[in-house]
Length: 316
Image (tube, rainbow, N blue to C red; front, side):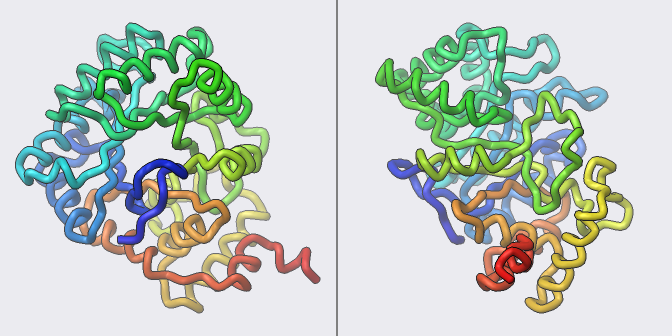
C-alpha cells in the first residue's frame, strides 16, 4: 500500500487509514475481524479508534472498538506491524468530556488495557477542551511519551490558531507537539452558517499551517457516511447547495473518465492535494472496503484536479 510521512521526522503510514467507530457494536466482532483482515491483506497498517467508540449507541458503554481491535491484534499476532491511533477527550459511560492531566493519564491506561498493547503509536486529543489549559493537556501527553506509552501526538477538532498555540507551548517547553490533525473534511463544501461544534471543519488555514509546519492532515467523514454512493443515505442537509450540485456533476464526469467510483475519486482527490490529506475510511462489508482502497490506484491528472477544484475557470 502507498504510504505517506506522518510528519517530516515521523514514520511512514498507510495512505488510507482504517476507521473503526462501530467495531464491536453495530459491526459485530466477527464482521470487524473480517474487515480488519481484508485491510491487512491489502497492505493496510494504519488503524484509528477512540476510547469512547461507540458509547453513544443504546446499550454501548464505550471502549468496544478498542477491545475488538485488541482482540484482533492478539489473534493475528501483528501488533508490531500495525500503526495504532486512539483518542481521549469525549465522554462515554462514567467518564466526562475533557483533557485534564488526570483524565489524559487515566484514559491512556484504559486504552492500553483495552487494546492489549504496551504503547500507542499516535495519541489524539479528540477535542480542544477549553476548560483545561492547553499546556496542561500537552504536558500530560508528553509525560506519556516520556514513559514510553505514546510515540506521537495528534489533535482532532482543533482550529488552526489553537494548533499554533500548541506548537509554541511545546517549543517553549521542549516538548513533542502535534504531528497530525484530524478534522472533518470531504470534497463537497458545507453551508458556511452550519455550526459543527464540537466537530471542526478543515479549512484553508489548516492547510496553510500544515504546509508550513509539516503536520499530517487527516480527514474523517471523508465519504459522508455513504452519501456519495448510496441511495438509502441522502446527502446531508448541510451540503445541499447549488454549488455542490455542480461539484457532484464534475465528480461524476471525472469518475466516468477514469472508470472509478465516486468514493474512489473523493479519496483519490484528497491524496492528490498539496499537502495530501490522508483519509480515514471504514466499512461494514469487505466489498466496500476493497472499493475504497481502490482509490490508491486512481491517478488524477493536473487538468482533472483543476476541473474538480474549479480552478480551470480561474485560469481562463
